Image (cartoon, rainbow, N blue to C red):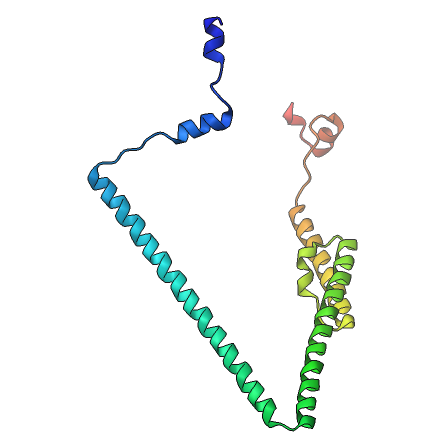
Length: 183
């Protein structure tokens, strides 16, 4: 091979080249190495303490939930069959109501998103109008859109206040404005 081709040829793939560059040996003095080791050790200790504290907190929460479940089980065991059935039905009713509320919120949010997109209002603002009640959501959406558009119009009008720029290429416009001395 000619010498020029040898100089331009890259040894290995780009990955190998990067690995070779990253494998440069960095050397520290003994004092520097001790300092680095101390820093790493202290940070590892802090991280370990943090994780241990979080683990303890989670374990305590789990114990509380277990305790509550045991107490609820004992309470239900003391009730008669009829009272137990009433409790279970009441709990199911409450869970169903919560599911229905969340479902209606999702439906209302989708409807509000549709209304906002038709009115060219950013859909990121839709959470400000969503309500479990469909009619309230629609009322809030309409009011919000009206106020938003009014605000945008006022802001644009305020920005556009003042005299429009003059067309200096049009001699008639210059003559009409009395800027004859501009020539």
